[in-house]
Image (tube, rainbow, N blue to C red):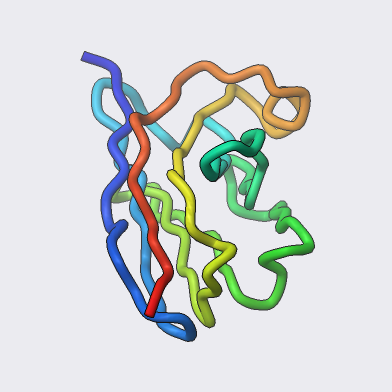
Length: 123
């Protein structure tokens, strides 16, 4: 069965850190560009961070630049999102998505979506 599974979400205090994982099963992640997206209640989904299949190209939304880091371990078939200095406005459901290449990812052409993991930043 082909799927992406996110993990690592939870409740954290402002200023804290979380590391999200996006693990693939049924296919090889190193052939795909991966994006992390988030959606807060009442808001549209936004692209948070992207990484190309070889890890050379990355993108960060202005709202997370300098605080979040995307990385991938193709040997483990997993992509990570390290989130530091978390703010209440980072609260959302975070989902990862796979696309055949970086250009298609930017166009929103997604081949696989994960189910999402909740991140809540609150004191």
